[in-house]
Amino acid sequence: MENTFVDFWNRHKRRGLTDLPDSGTPSWDPAIRAARNEPSRIVYPVRGLYLEAIDRATESIWITQAYFIPDREIQEGLMAAAARGVDVRVILPQRSNHVIADVVSRSYFATLLAGGVRLFMYQDAMVHAKTATVDGKWTTVGTANIDRLSLSATTKSTCKSSTGIRPA
Image (cartoon, rainbow, N blue to C red; front, top):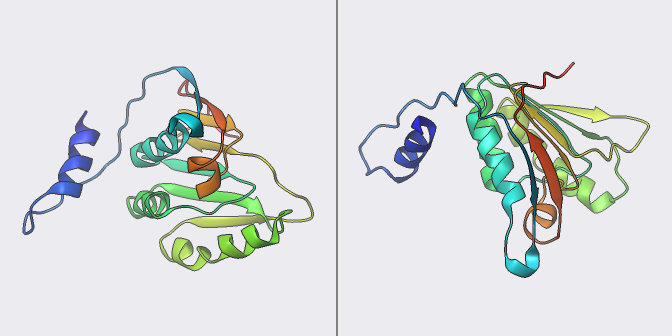
């Protein structure tokens, strides 16, 4: 609840008022949840799952994606997490099977790197995973890439767990 209040205050405060410190959320509600985007119903919860987890991170955000083209809010969320000391890492293929996606993805690299996000390019094979682990407490595996097409225009699904899985 505190995290929700801080986020709302910082986004909607009047000019001249100071931001509240954003420290994430240290406790998580253990659960496994499936979510799916449904374009025909204009329902897109997968993006929201990522945004909430990124916003709540206090220790680490480790992402693996085949196509990584973050929208402004996800990009800013990852950089804000890095700025508050979260270890933010993204693994993606050095070369995917979509040249245009690679070119567009790389246009975000300089900004992300300057914002403290660490990028790792997997070589010699196409990484096609769509996974994320946040604080070793929240994990998702699914079909959605972090790109506009997957998060807001196609039917994609993911399963997320908040059961305390710790990455190796």
